[in-house]
Length: 489
Image 1 (cartoon, helix red, strand yellow):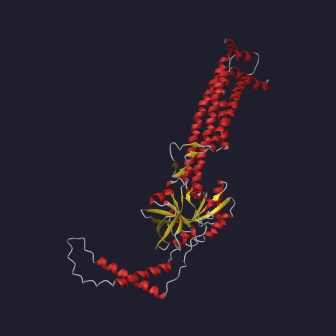
Image 2 (cartoon, helix red, strand yellow):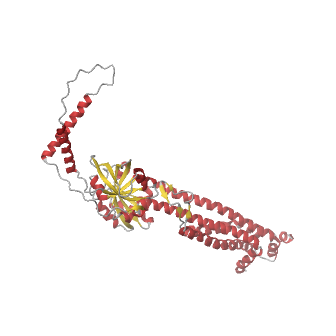
Image 3 (cartoon, helix red, strand yellow):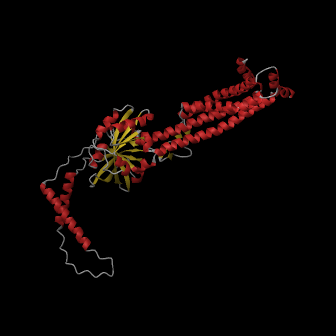
């Protein structure tokens, strides 16, 4: 008799096909929408994470601890090549690239802007990020650095001349300060000052300037040609430049001295992240190292980790190898993004919960109506000796048959929506050209993602909820008195 219960439950579900069809359709719609919602949110999270790791920070970053706190140019990693080589040998690391940062003022013919110069290795940076694929015009940075003349030490005569120029400049500055009029009107009038000596001849001043420039060229010679620059689309718009135009960048070296060089725009990129497109300018790592007097050093080593779930494990391994350095996975570098992803998941779970509550109430209503309509039938079954446990199981089997059938169809429908969103996406270009989350640019065409959790969880949870909710109608039927049930017409 127990083996006949599933067959009997299937027959009972089909007895009132209209009601079963309405309830089943509601369940199918609910499950398919839940599967599609998970696919869309998972896809949005994947795009957000890609924008963070594949266009900016990578999965793991290595810094000097002081650079994280103050981001000063002096807080650099020495012998960075050794760090990069060691990181590449860690299991799970698929790429490693060094980076150097410097603040600068960049000037074009019509405008100027404050930017962040980023020195990258064009050979290894594509192993970590997809910056080269963000190009919209021109080309990426060349693999070979720009030729620079060798530095030379100052001769004894030049050192003496430099000291004399410094002393003269200091004296002139002090004389100008002494010549200033007191601000206090009640102060006694200053005694008449002796007439200053006439300035040196213009030819002497010109000679001093030329000597200063010659010593500067010896200590920090200019490159043989403008440095190739990869410029963000927002910065290119502000400076009103295009590929092939020249701009001038002024920055500070690690020793505090002013440095500058002409740059040639070789390419323009667009990441969708306004902060990068407007304020970042990429140079060859060796060029920026030479410009800032930081040869062989870098501020950051970025790593690509596959699969990305291993980022924490890779960071722990590298912390053991380099205890003096700061090694952080992406979710420690940008905890706000991780929090945003969690909030999105919780919001989706809340929406799915509401859908499940409505669907569960529909199943409970269907099972209660089925019990009320079959009161006489259930009373007869109890009168001829069917145990209450079998009646309870019969009602639960009916709910399970209805839910399983709806889950199968709803999951297939939701999976179809997921596949469509994976290939075609949800196109929002009619509403916006792009938007950002957490400061990161997101493509207006949001593509879905198919995950095991997103496909199976809605059906499993809804099946459990509906069967549990059907316990009340089943208990009502199981506790029915045969005499009372048989009196119903």
